[in-house]
Length: 223
Image 1 (cartoon, one colour):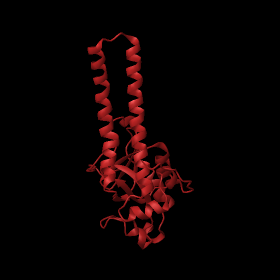
Image 2: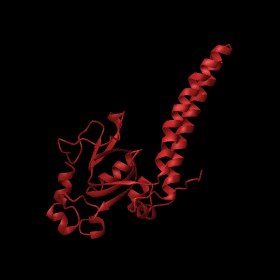
Image 3: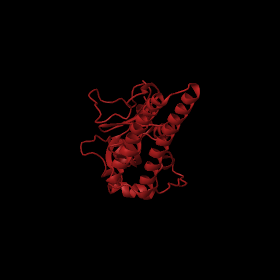
Image 4: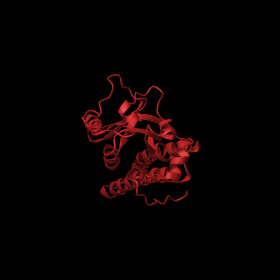
């Protein structure tokens, strides 16, 4: 497994989402970069090692707490091995399967942000039903991003970086993991980035003229 070395980045979005301009160029072509593959693989194995380590500690403490005969010891090992196998399948296994194609998907549009049980800002359409939710549990403490027909879970730094720069974005992600690998702010005044906007996206005229959000737009988006 190739070790992932985190490069230094000055751009806040590049820093919190762990990508570079080189990564983004490959994402624009629908491909994962070697660095992104290494990072996602390392994150998956770190999670796996933590789970296996926790199971090993539980097993060790259980052995110290009582004397087990051969049958009880076999049962204990079975109870620990099964969760370890499940952890492997749902971390390393799923990640390796997702990375085998080395492709990314893209969703474009206005970003909507929320925390916990608070509503999204700007408000989502009443009929919003995401293709895949980024939050399966722990909803009360989750930072969330909705864009297009997708919903993603964010960490605090990612949430704060995006909330400081509301607007239109391209979001690149690994579909089976529903994990963001890079983001690109869309400037509708620039053809090369405006090409990423959905055809039916309603872009306000003042944004088209200036290429940036006015103070009034920012206040509206922040609710």
